Image (cartoon, rainbow, N blue to C red; front, side, top):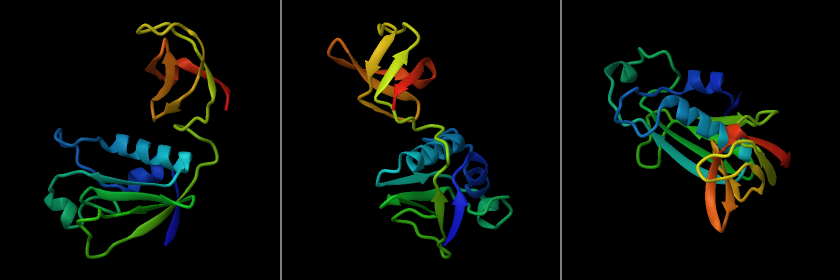
Length: 159
C-alpha cells in the first residue's frame, strides 16, 4: 500500500468524478469530506459513488488514477485508507492508499467553546459551548434548541 498526503491536490489527481447534475455530491464536496474525516480521526466507513457512465473513464483516457467514481474511506484504529471500490462493486484491480493526516486541520476544528461573531437567523452573537460539528457548521444550543452556525462566523476560544 502506498501512503499519500491527504490534501485537495493529491486527492483531486487521484479521484475521478462525473460532473453530472444528478450526482449527490460534487467532486470538491467528496474531497472536502474525506479530508474532514481524516482530520477528525475517528473510526468510520464512508462510501462515495459518482453514479455515471463515461466511455473515456473505462478505457483509460481520463487523466486520473482511478475512474468510475466509486470510493470507500475507512478509518480504523487511527489509520485512514481510501479504496477505489465500494462493498458491492469491486474492480478488477482493487487499489488502496493510506492517507496521511495533515499537520494542520482545515475542516475539522477541535472546539469546546466558540465566539459567534454574527447575529443571524435568531442566534445572537456571543460565546457558546460546542455540541458537535460537521464540515461547515458548529452545533450549539440556544434556548433549548440545537442550532447549526457557520464555522466562517466563529472564532475557536477553547479546543
